[in-house]
Length: 209
Image (cartoon, rainbow, N blue to C red; front, side, top):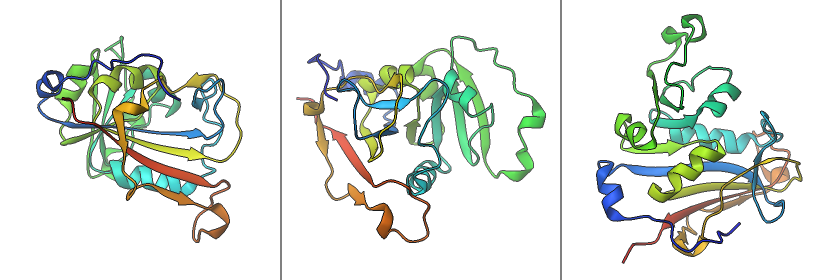
């Protein structure tokens, strides 16, 4: 789960270039890592999707009415249906992604905007909210890590196979916010459909000296 490299290349100059936005990564993974790497998917699928409803509710609450940035593969996994009430920005080498109007029921949503861009920096500059959420996949997480201020990580207790991994990073560069981190035991939760225990953690990047 820790990185083998020492320098994340995070600098205040790089952050200033992005208009002082607060950039947060959010992801979920099984606590049982594979070769010390956190699994975030298996092919085009997320094996635990829908099995930890409390995590989905938290994701929605955190990202609602804000900007989410995703890669083309994540966009494909959503079947080209943007997340409602959020500005959706797709980071893709192919800026000519076509959207079918029938797939975007604008009348049902109070806020929706879709943008496509080739570079991570331009995606951040397109963002209309002060906080920008990076929601995957692996390549986009890797691009974002040098710029990120916070990591929101949910570890779930189940064992799952997978072939897509969260990129390596150095936990020594991050400070855990113990007040925001919570452990949820599935059997003790009310009004949820959680099948697994989960541990939600928030990490803040340490100040660059």
